[in-house]
Length: 501
Image (tube, rainbow, N blue to C red; front, top):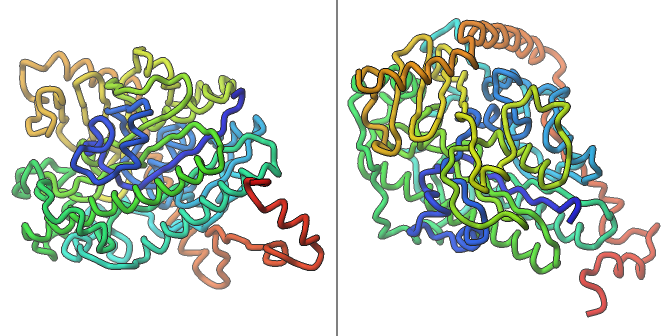
């Protein structure tokens, strides 16, 4: 295919360590395992930023938060930033989004021609942190440990209702694409909110993990004083002192999380079945925006540079891409250039201002420069950066001691080697690399300025008349099903697929 169809399935907060080479054997995920068998499986993939909006902004634009200004979950995704949806649409693709992408600001499309659902999170500046108030906890929108203590079974929830809708409309769209009324190639992004907390799952998926051997973390909870300063700030931001956590809470939360992976597997299986039933061919990408610590070290959710939070699954099934495991560290920043390569697009005019590369050479054994990660949102008091190079992970924040881990020797990141004289040369080399990429003082100043501006604007726009930025899906009811300006015979013939069988 000159311009192949593209199906992107994105999930939310899926821990990449559960995908060492596709889904772990013990996960009940038959559809994802079948997809893995025909995919290039990038075992060491990292988010651009371990938080929803900045992570997704990086995925869409191939730019780090320091370029886009999408520092946190209330930072505007500017309309002038090209995304892979813009590149594909410019080349003649029909581009559609079903589900979440956490766009903040008046532009709720960012290159997508169609959106089938609204977003699950607000589009305004209300979730803006404030570096001028270190230690401030904003109760109405910050995570808290109630997601852990409240884990369990429910047949519906805010999140389940949302993802049921996302899958339904995505399936409808695939059927519509199959009818052939639009001869353009298509890119459909289906973006779920699970397995993001709260860790609440339907009974039939919960029961799959009754005897699961993985309901306790590999690294038990550590004393607060034994954590690095940023991890301590995450504990404080999550209001850990108000929620005493028991082993049973941990087991139930992890069980609910695993159960929701199986829930997603069913939804994804339905979508892939429709693709097969309608005889459509497409490149398939499976990815998450960031991970979840799942109680490792006592940490939950994201916001951390540790593996559970920063590492994500990435699988790509495409003609010409050999199925198999790829161990070279890569980034979600690389998806845009990779999709451009598949579609035969030249994006060189924007490439100097992006941070990703095409993964096609990497999948064939080629190198990738050290993978950058940034974080400048809640629970931080200054920007945090990280580099993953070979076995090494280097983490730096102007306010905190450096961290250095050898992930080959220490995959659970138990031992910080930054002060070990035996690794001084490695530390110095990675520190120098970070200094060539980042000016942390300027980065910090830009974040602070952005926060201050947004807090003023948000306060002003919530007074008096209020015009929401949230995407409002429109249904033209008078153009659906059968109406009197339509020919019934033509309508029924056009809507049937396949015809003549």
